[in-house]
Image (cartoon, rainbow, N blue to C red; front, side, top):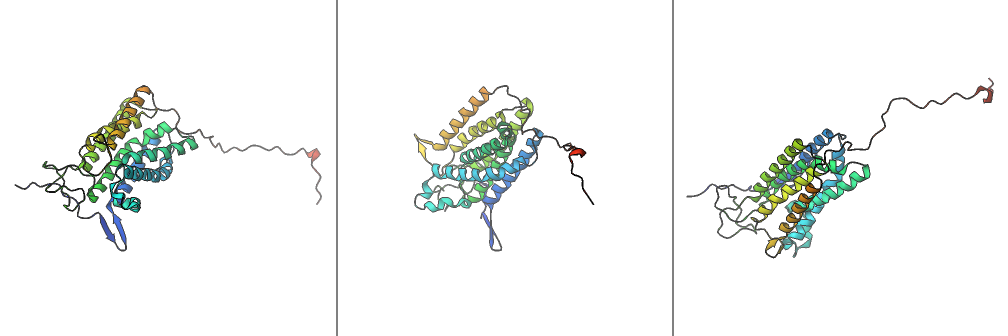
Length: 292
């Protein structure tokens, strides 16, 4: 009996004239757009100005991608040891989500601080959108046939090209860890939106709930993956990172328990009343007489 496993796309690149359209890049771009749209709506609902999330994203997103690539290369250095230059080929896949969150967070933190924007309110506003962006971005892994799990006979197993460097000899299907994380991230987005509406969270607690919930899912998903990664005492480095993130999130939520939403999220602006300072006419007695 042959099981109908989930297929993998035959290609992740489509040629449009002289330009290649890469599914991996398209997934990332679509995720970023979704995150900005969701973040803008939530930011305005919190009393912010429309356009702020877009402005911050133009700087934070590139730093997030840079951080994600650096993290991936550090935690999974195998493919780049013999060819270090290939570490620059981002379009071929390989972005570490923890590094992306850290890089984007730091850039956004600096920008918000310089503009006097509430950093905690901003983080709380964009948290669900980031989770949705991560879910969409995981589709790129599907097209690239990467970051899948160990072999399985479950009916939702994922077919992988036998020539794939991470393929296991004789295996017919693998755990679709990209799909697991996609669904988990959508669940995380729904969780933080619900919790925010239920308790009107503030002070960065929405963002802390997001990273904590993501860490829980990433820990069990990480145990299924078989791609090359640095290990310590039998556990992948990502497991330790996620454990630290989870503990940090729980501690933060505990310390900030009861903190509500911020009253003001941006610097106050002086209203323009249309009135201008009146300059009195000069004293006629001190004004030189003009002649025709």
